[in-house]
Length: 474
Image (cartoon, rainbow, N blue to C red):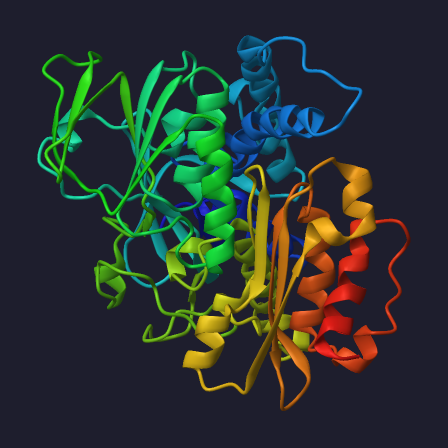
């Protein structure tokens, strides 16, 4: 046992947005909390993913909006230096002092270092000064270590030191020639942002035959059209076979499976993420030292005697989205506080009831794309009695007023037996504001006959809901 100062009610491994949320909820419940973070408090999302990527994409979106509105004119190219300066502001110039103060106000104790489980209710921390600090939890340890960018096993790729989302979002000098591997959210968002900010020759190598393969097909089609029109070279059903970079920081050559060579200044990999469980001591508590940590709906790790270990966010593999991780963390922190005090832990808010595959997700490109619930393909595969309705967003009067030549599409997937929405997908300029309506309808299983009486304002794009329901037959 360490010194009394090193004993806390709860220890949270990882101080990203998910870990911070779990700590805040546990502290709100009256528990003492230690947060252990190796890098920046605030984590990947705050400094290298969600926040800075949107700061880079927003000017691109606004420039596109201006180009669709008669009477306005973008005078010259986007000011890249100004955009990067604004990016720096949104991430506090890569200084986490604001987040540290936030954690201290919970209150929680932030410990700088790498955390590793060391048996039941114990965490060993390798501190930045080379020392070690032993921590013990009275009630719970929460693993919130997130995920790391995945890198495919391509000869020469790792040696070429490819960019991930971290380098792309923290860029100081935009490369003139860029190769992007992948066709998912990170690859699409960063290709569009960096191309608009100066990567004049941007080539995307997409393994499959469309972008955003986990979403409705029309989303990838609309986005591909937009990327091509901006000058991005999209190559489908193409793989990087070999990568060469003779000099560190020098030009990179990508050899593709069709015998082509692509010369570039940088290569960006955006093919997904791996849960960050490597060398965090899972084997010391009886768990396999790889793969997601399996949890129940209270976020308690299954298969750990004593029920003291919890895992929230990417690390449990349920849904690799920050907002879903924060949702799980709210559940987790409240459950831990209730169990520590011997209070009921079965309130509805203390269980994760959201189907991970049905959580809302957004692609902040131009056009914006979002979905909540399931796609038509998934609904049919799961045996639902499905009916779908699609509608041209550009046919809505509010859309025409928003932009000349507005192009977009909306789709609903209906469970015909219960007459509720299983999934909703929108793609088009500025459609993200309609996501919460769909999320509420899908999550709360609002009957279509009730949704019909939710009256949208005129003249706005929100009238798409009337159009969809009328097309359905109401």
